[in-house]
Image (cartoon, rainbow, N blue to C red):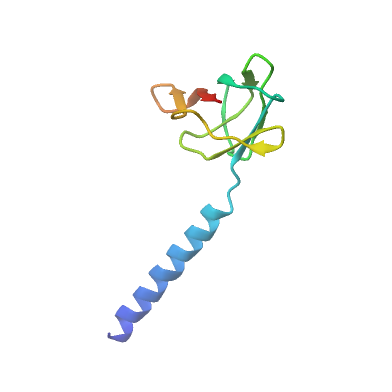
Length: 108
């Protein structure tokens, strides 16, 4: 490999590594369910925000969040302090330009 190609290869490798580390450091949105809660969850959002948001769900399975994670953000859903998985996919309701206005999912 000639020196110019080697420098380019190293620069691309370092850039890819830096991007991977930066993305890996982003925290998941934390969603707190009420003790023993099962059923539908509906989060209404009024702005887009950082995925490090903490959202508390009420006893009816609802929450109003000032900011919501961007579409596709990862979540940590907790019930009684333990991680819970969703029943089916998370549904993202968005405006025409992709701003998240609501998030819906179910937990068992």
